[in-house]
Amino acid sequence: MKYNDIEKELSHFTLKEPEHNLKVQVLRKARTAWFEKQPVPVFTFRLIRNYAYGLAMLLLISIVSLKIDNSLTDKLIGGKTTLVAKTIEKPNDIGNLCSDLGIDCKTYQLFANMVKTGENKTGPTALEQLEQLKKEFNLINGGLS
Amino acid sequence: MEKQIELKIKELLLKNDSCALEIIYDNIGRNLYKYMLSILCSHTKAEEVMQNLFVAIAEKRNRLSRARNLTSYIFAMAKNQAMDFLRSEPKNEKNIEDYKNIITVRDNTTDKLNDEEIEKITNALFFLPLKQREVITMKFFQGMTFEDIAKALNISLNTAASRYRYGIEKLKGKLKELGNEI
Image (cartoon, rainbow over all chains, first blue to last red; front, top):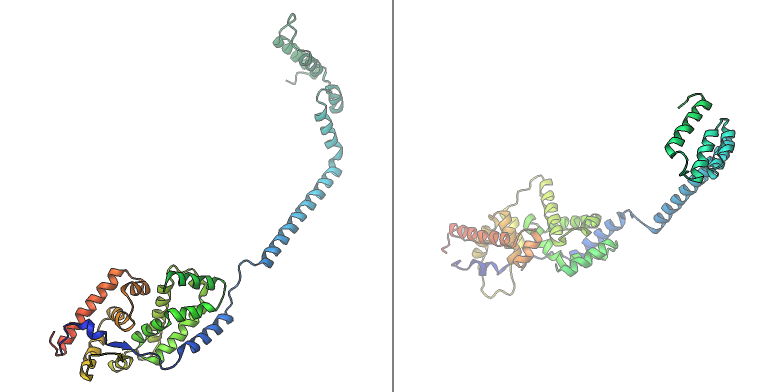
């Protein structure tokens, strides 16, 4: 025999088929393995709902703790915080502020009035007035500046 | 395996539907069996490894659903399973008699081959390197195209064709060696 066309000769051959129906046997074992090893779900509706509940609970706790913290702070330094709020609300009432703080602030009152009425064109310049106020303040407060 | 079937299988795997196993078997089961048979040279061993392979497919379905090329992934799994099986055997050397037991002549063959010719071709095939033999086996005994072979073995079309060409050349040489003129 001549093997000039080996490909033609090879085409006469094949591999034997399995001796019995392998499909049923193979699939039965594979299905058993499939159901035995169920994958752990990463995200399910129940899991997402629990995460949401957890987050809501944390938010609630943080809000409540913030409220408690604020009320305790108010109780401890309530007077002072009220005072500060008052002064901030009425910045022009310098007299009241100075009396509350216990300092003589005549100079500041004068300066505030000057700013309020505007610069006097005929009188001394703003710089001269400021220098004057500074001297007065130094005299009253014993040269602090 | 066609792209659409692969997508369908991946979809079923993601849905955790065991019908994916049946679709895999129906599409490539026969080729997988013959592929393992060509490596293991025994029906009993091939059946056992085939079962192990499908159990592995069921267990590693999450990885399988992410595989870029499902067919080559499964064929690679099959090869690994077959090689592991061979390594686990105390005596893993295959002999020519085992190989003769798995090869047969097609029923519809018009040119009748005598027993001597069959034996010579079988001998020549047995002595081919595994990589060349698996391509020739897939091409002739399983009727796969080069494209299918390349896809299954995760090699390029050129590599599949060259392995086939070198295999055929070696086969011719071996037959010449065995006393036949070419």
